[in-house]
Image (cartoon, rainbow, N blue to C red; front, side, top):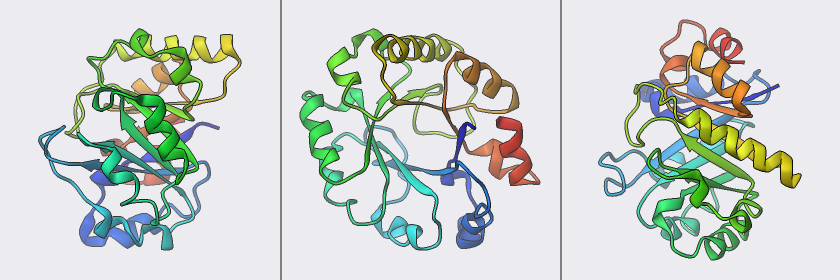
Length: 214
């Protein structure tokens, strides 16, 4: 069963706890947390203060996507709030192996994110082998509700081929413009984990929306 990761950026923050608890009976679900700094992307979202008690109201894994210029500054800051996966952008770092090593000291899983403009072939195999997750962005990061970029399918297929060839088990995640139709396309390309915001939180029934994605 594919993992679905509702992006809480699209949730109703005036009823945040109720929103989170409405997913308590779902299986294979992560909560996707978009942390933005207003610099790497123009928007600001939430920080540690907003997210620090989230793990107390859910047993689902917390998946943090750091759309920030200096991800190394967030490793220590967020380490004690129950985050499972810490994902950082390829484009924000020079020594990727050192960054991955630092993240692994505090988090069970480390993810590498590719901006739509980044060529997947720029990622060395030695880096791919060290991560637990690769997130292919299928929209420009920083804004919700964008249309799916079809060229992301080639990137997903590329990483799926590497995974099979090298006998690796990293998760392939996709984020951006995911709905009932694009979910079929990315799953067929090799995706294991689908991030969806608007499609889920703007639906009348969250469970039905998740089933449609799968």
